Image (tube, rainbow, N blue to C red):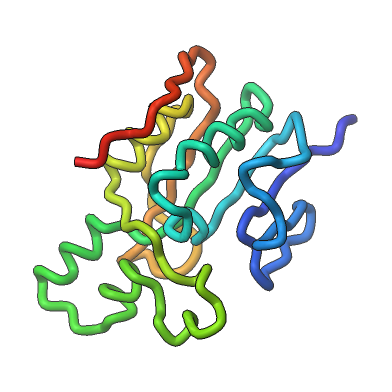
Amino acid sequence: MERSLRLHLGAGHYWWPGFVNLDAEADLKALPYENVDEIHAIHLFEHLPRLEVSEYLREWRRVLKDDGKLILELPSLDKIAQLIVNGERNQRLTLLGIFGDPRDWDGRPLMRHEWAWTDVEILDVLAQNGFEAKVVEPVFHIPQRDMRVEATKAMFHVEHHKIEEIV
């Protein structure tokens, strides 16, 4: 029986057993793998430059098996905005979800958040890059602030080579 290949991207110091754990030293736009069963990117996606996201997703789609899964968890701008409207004062639930924690930035610029994602935008970007996806409740971090996106490689996809328009 073939052993499954699962990647944990943006692992930091959270090394998961049974996964190939990759962090800042790895080029996540040029992975040396094929036939990957699952890719997990837990609190990584918000750290990627917005205009480069499609490059990452195209690479991740390339290495996944046809029935491969992509799991993302990240702050939800929809939830954060609602928390702010409701008067939430805990910055861990609001501003830190948008920008990252400035206490981590000194000497660690990769800890800054590059983009805040809404449910609609992340689903659109995933669809544009060949994934079928849905937003569900997160498993890690803060459920009232975060989202989990479970995606699979779409079987029929015409690749687009343009930069998405940011409206």
